Length: 377
Image (cartoon, rainbow, N blue to C red; front, side, top):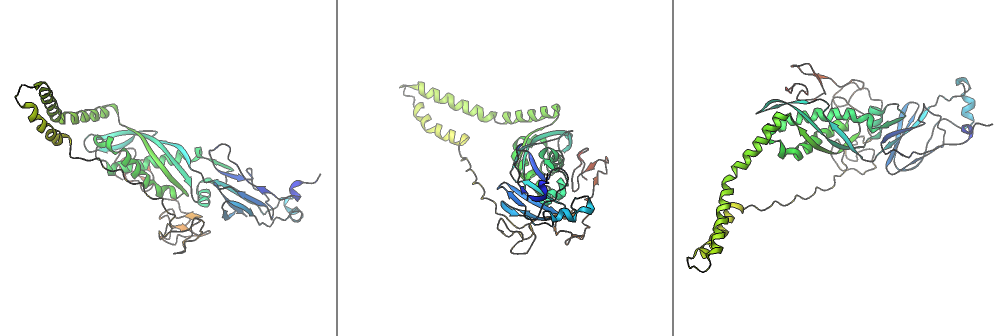
């Protein structure tokens, strides 16, 4: 019986049935002999990266594409006899899911140290959810996926959680002086932390679309101190409460005055509006801010607007399809580059590690505060 792979061309496509796969490789096991003229079908929510002879040679958007390799049906089998009928011209296609992956969890596995201005060293637990999206498929595959046949959100969630917790500790140390002021700063903390994480995520070709903080929980004794501080705010308004009760009593007296002729009802009719205006008026509710306009695609080098399907910036010529990034300065590097054109770092150099000089704990590069002892690095 003739070998079907000897004659027929491939039609490559992929559907994500689980909803959690970020990358799927064809063939999933090992590498393949994708033939000259094979058809590649890419959906609107996908991108495809074609690897040939071990290198990424191109990224493909939605549509049908024709792949060109040196594997020609029948002739390739004859030419590959010295390699046990296995062609050395290996090729693979990585399908990348471009949808937004939602409801990924982040949180502190162990309490992180926070140096409070009023309460001293406090151990905090925090947790929430975040959403992410792949925006640079080639960089994502080269930096995180590697040669895996399938890559899911579970495999990246743990590492990204560690990055979020480290940046959360830094942002808390810089923007919050005391946990007593925490209840009013949840939205501010989430927005600021999200902006700080954008650069960390961009090194892997992914974008943090949303980040939410569900809770920040200090130890029970610290929580009790925060509750006591909140009660003090109630007592500060006690004077206004007493004034309101006095005004209500005067209003009731005016209603029961009837026709006695004392004139109290008439006087209170003029006094009450002024009293209530003094104690409860004067502040108009702030208008809701207008939602920001949709962000335009911009070149990461010169910030000029670029069309969505461009591979190079029309203003500065910056390469928009990222194959690799410098571990030190984040500069996009051309394929096969040996040194960063901006800072000169070798392409294979790993980012430096950072150890706390007080307790010796290892922290992420560029961390500002230690996760274990809370001291500034």
